[in-house]
Amino acid sequence: MCGIVGYVGENNATPFLLKGLKRLEYRGYDSSGIAVLGEEIGCVKEVGKIEKLEEEVSKNELKGSIGIGHSRWATHGGVTEENAHPHWDCEKNIFVVHNGIVENYKEIKNKLIKRGHKFVSDTDTEVIAHLIEHFFKGDLESAVKKALRIIKGTYGLVVIAKKDPGKMVAARMFSPLVISVNDKGSFVASDPSAIITHSKKMIFLEDGDVAVIQKDNFVISDIKEKIKEREEVTLDWDIEDSQKNGYPHFMIKEIAEQPESITNSMRGRIVLEEGSAKLGGLELVEEELKNTKKISIIACGTSYYAGITGKYLIEEFSGVPVEVSLASEFRYRKKVIEKDETFIFISQSGETADTLAALQEVKKKDVLTLGIVNAVGSSIARETDAGVYNHAGPEIGVASTKAFTSQVVVLSLIALFLGRQRNLSLEEGKEVANTLLSLPSLVSEILKDDSEIKEVAEKYKDFKNFFFIGRRYGYPASLEGSLKLKEISYIHSEGYPAGELKHGPIALIDESFPTVAICLSNSVYEKMVSNVEEIKARNGRVIVLANRDKKDVKELTEDVIYLPTAPEFVSPVLAVVCFQLFSYYVSVSLGRDPDKPRNLAKSVTVE
Ligand code: F6R
Image (cartoon, rainbow, N blue to C red; front, side):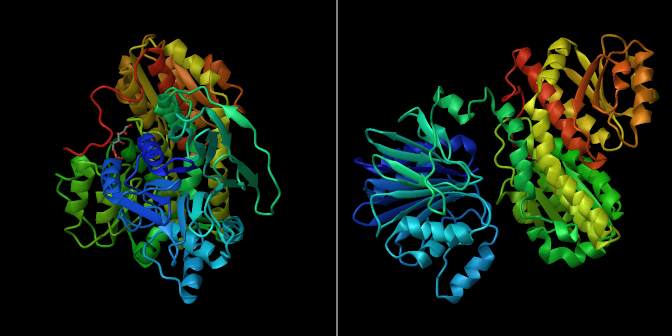
């Protein structure tokens, strides 16, 4: 995710900005830039590592006591110097850095173009600079507030203006910003880690806040000019902790981020009144999607399990048959590709060698290829005909967590869209859309109190083998739960469709081989209960995932993990969040490092 840092004070801003950006590197980025206001505003931007920016800055002698910096993780527009931040207006008076997404940027941009504004990038952020310019009459704060009344979407932004020097104006809406002041000046950042070396005392802005920051003070108000008092918080963090936002590991931080990452994956994509989804990346291929007769999903690992979930979703909502393949198998298989078949490639990194090779094989045929990718501008995103970005933010923990839930959410949106193109009624569509909108709060409910999961993890951590079982939507969830446990705890584990157990694997069951069973209140509940009974009859221990309304599960086993009741199609997300937590707590209590499991790499770019 993008990072912001800003400084106003007595000293030269440049070293503070570069150091701040380096501390934000852990968040992932593809380009960066700084703008510094001295006599003039000087701005340097670079694609790639911060070192490249440092090198370029050293040639340019950027000096001045006010400055803003940004590290970008591309969302709108490719990874280029033009699209890197800061962005400026026509007059090069106003410079902006921004995290978030301006949802109505196209509309604003078209109006500004008609008024003669000239744009040089493909970003939504550049629109903010020009909109502020439109309102600027010498007072930056007032121009920013007028612009914010028009902008729809999310932002954490910091603005400086040559013609109103001595200050930064910062504003927050769903994208964090924090201010800190010491004897050298005032600092602002998207994340305390960028500025914590200057002071541990932080003031966190809240949604709707606009702060005018000067070298030794700041004033916070809202866009209606009402002054806001915000409490100062002293953070007891070292640098490493602050990058993890106070969490002990990136994995648990990313698990906890899921209500936000799921919201980001859905933002601006659900059209409730039409009971449908609007996916900008698929607009140009809507007609082809309407005529598609079959969908093939191709991916690896966790992304493949998201793909199996996608099969159930797409077949349920749209009736289009779906085949799911592992990329490593597909690429060497004799392929029977049908006319009017659509291929979906799912990849968090967008660089997985097998998935990319499978895509290149498919591209030899005349069929539509789509990507569901998290890393903007990555190879799979570039090489597919069209696609949908996850917008889940960078995933640092090696074991995938928020990428999986985001992939399932994007697949749900695609399934809804395909369904509405076919026989899914308006009412059914609205129900699906409303359920998806409730998903972040359902996930929050699990995260709010994970003590039950922690307790069960503690109790079972010393077992050497596990089964994870489920049916229908519970099947891919059990595969993903099992993968999470094995990769970060090194405990042997198998995910199975529950109905398959009796065709062989049940031979392994005894009291030393526990099973985690997904028994949610849905169409397969009774069948799952029968499977649990079969395991118990063979002295097997069972951990059951259940909804609180099913009181009788307590008779099945004493180890129950409860999750909120919700329609079956979102249950994989909820079950997998529980499994992520379970695996995390097992791993930590065994003294493993869940962020860096042995033998694994985050991006598998070799075969
Ligand atoms: C497991 C995990 C891997 C990846 C797989 C594909 O936690 O992260 O199984 O899902 O290597 O990676 P992407 O999605 O980047 O193609």
